[in-house]
Structures are given as structure tokens and as C-alpha cells.
Length: 309
Image 1 (cartoon, rainbow, N blue to C red):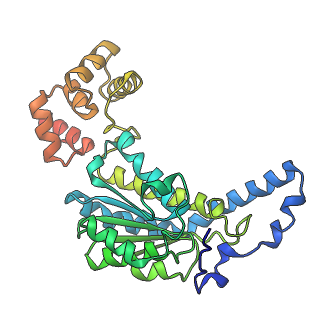
Image 2 (cartoon, rainbow, N blue to C red; image 1 turned 90 degrees about the horizontal axis):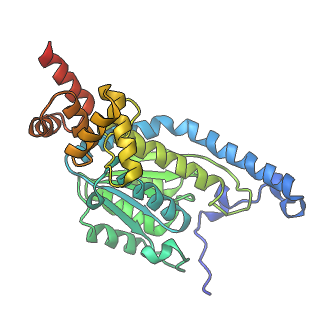
Image 3 (tube, rainbow, N blue to C red; image 1 turned 135 degrees about the vertical axis):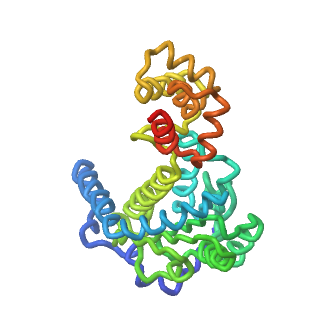
């Protein structure tokens, strides 16, 4: 198996260093080992706190681009790439985000999701080529995730996306890393030395998952895909989701179970349309109202209230 050539900055990357706290980890009883690793996970959560303002700024920049029809693009290699894919694939079932507006640029392709592809991350040119093939443009939001911040594939992809005018976001765990230099928005969750040196599936991976969860969920909320803490853009495509949809309609409209079920049925499983039906709007008018309000249910309900007043 070919060994990966170390990056010139690797010697000073905190995620690659041996932590004195955990150097005897392999000699500890399981309970002590697990408690120590849990401590590391808590530290990873705390590391996200200083990055909250940067995450918020990225959200505010991303939302207008996405309203213009842009796509959400995740770029990464290895663990970081897999965490990006996990975040993105959950947006469709949770928020009905269109599948065609999700792009995953994974070093080594989708085979790398389940097995290591040696050397796939080592080429900036491959990252830039992937961006060109995906036809990335100014309305796209490109998120490069790399714990080290030195992954050539991700650097090449984010640099090319920035040149194309996309909203670019770097998510790293090492301050001062080169990925930050090629991104418009720089999100650093400084998780420090890992429990197992270099195993960024641990603290850095946890911090990355939190950052992406916060970013993508906030984006969906700002795009009007959540109302009063409910997933109103969810599609009722099976029995469990139909029950959830009916419960949301009952909660917002204030109707009984039979009426809620009827509204959901008439709306074809579209929760927002079902809610507007329950508020006395016919299907065509409900669809037109949501389009006028850019899919924002709160604003649509406010419009109904104004008309009634």
C-alpha cells in the first residue's frame, strides 16, 4: 500500500500531535478509556462556540444565493467528505430540499464513502476538475470540509469555486491552514490534539458534524422550510410521515384528526398546502400564495390574516 506523503505543514498541525493526556490510553481499563474519550467529545462541542459568528455570516451569505436557485455543494476527502455527505443527504427527507440541488464532490468518488481510496485526496487539479465538471457558478454554495485544512483536493476545489464566484466556506480544525486562504467564509473549530493522534473521526469529526448541522439547518430555517419549530416542508410519503404531517396540520390549523387527514390528502402530502387549505384557502390560491411568499409559510399566514382584517 502506498504511503501518503506528509503535507509540509503537517508537523505543526495540532490534530496530528500526540496528546500527553491520552498517551497511556491503551493501558487503561475500558471504563477509564471511554470516560477520557467522552471528555474529548465535550471538548469538541466547546470548540464550536467561538465559530458561531462565522457560521452565522456564512448562512446570511448563502441564503440569497440559494434563493436564486443555487445548489449546496459539499467537498471533502475521507472522514471529512463522509461527514459532508451525511449532512447533505439528510436535507431532502427533512426539509424537502431538491436532490438536484445537492452536489457531493468526494475525493475518490462515491466508492470512497465505504473504503479508503489511496492518493485520491492528493491532487489540487482533481478538485478543480471536479468543480469544473459540476459547472459551479455564482449562485452555488460550496462547503469544503477538512480537519487538517491541508487536503489538496479540497483546496483545489474551493479555490476553483471561489474563482467561479460561488459562496465558498471552509470548515477546518487547525487555525492558519491553507484551506482558509481560498474560502470567502472561514469556520475554525479548533479541537486540538486528538485522543488518538491523527484520528480526526474523533474530536474534529464531532465538531465538523456540529458545524454542518448548525449551518444547513439555519439555512433551511431562513429559507422558510421550518415554521414554529416544525418541518413544514417535509413530504408525507409514507404512513409515519403522513401521521407527522397530520399532527402538524392539527397543531397549526387547530382542527381535528379527520379534517387534518383530509387536508393532507387533498394537498398530496404537501404540509404547507394542507395548512393553507385548513385555513380556508383553495389549492390553486394556496400554491400561488406560497410562490408569492417564496415558500415562507409564516408570511403566507400573515397575508391571510391581513386579508381577513
